[in-house]
Length: 132
Image 1 (cartoon, rainbow, N blue to C red):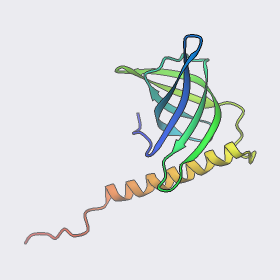
Image 2 (image 1 turned 90 degrees about the vertical axis):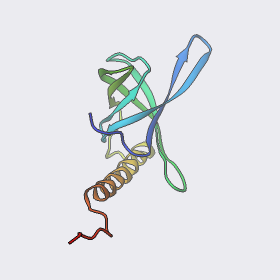
Image 3 (image 1 turned 30 degrees about the vertical axis):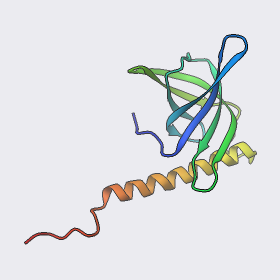
């Protein structure tokens, strides 16, 4: 499995009984315009739908894409958690809706963050000198 995506979480609500609901935050491991991979200890089955709010933490203001309906297409157990492959339902990356625009913005920022992280991780420290 890929590593978790930086500064990005999915929030969703889970019902407990008739009146009680819990808001859950889950880490994301993949994201594209068609769906994502989420890790949580909450139970879903393939065919279930979940309404997500993706939240990217930024220095001044969070970027939020809310109301994303996702279909659970795959479930993989990992220790006490599950990885879920989710497909976004009724979301067209070219439609220009506020939700698809926010999702596109999150993906752009995410690519920049990953690019910066990989450059930092692959370059040697600047002040190292070889000993003779």
